[in-house]
Image (cartoon, rainbow, N blue to C red; front, side):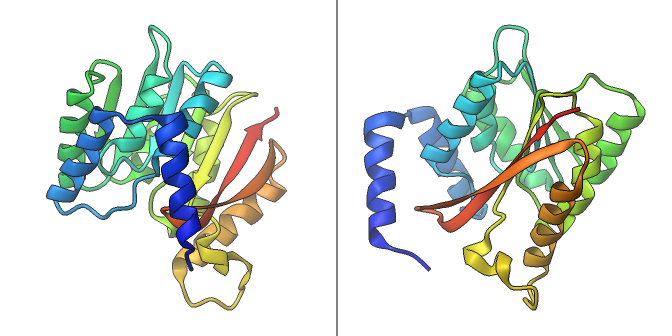
Length: 222
């Protein structure tokens, strides 16, 4: 499901508002050269995340799913002096590429990459009572989204913004009979968000070079 105009508008937005950025372009080239899947957020989406982080004054950001570090670079650029971004990646190859990209972006001193299963890392963080995060970006394996949510809330404070990517799945999200476990994962995630007593949320559909998808944005209210 695509439309050539979606790509054209993304290019228009990127050229006019996002503007070319060699560091980010190099990160995408490195990901491609390493054979990583081309599933990073688009440039307009990356800047959207950065602007959201800046708008809420995020000082501590958690990312679940690093891939090549493209979105981590956007988010880390939003941090003020003394800020910190923690990003979780299960694949050692992805983590290596991300470290190289984040280092090239001169952000290695404010970004911590944790290798291993995100569930286990999140559980350790909860058990250690680490300082709460101001923004949490979930962009990892979709079947695990429902498992990430309660841990993300535990790592939040009132006002934290939790953003989950790829929740529309080309519209398949409305099909309860889908055979795709990724669809079931994001459907369950959205249902849990809707019922959670500490969350207020909405879902936004997106189109562009990444096709038809969307974000669920949830604010921790208490």
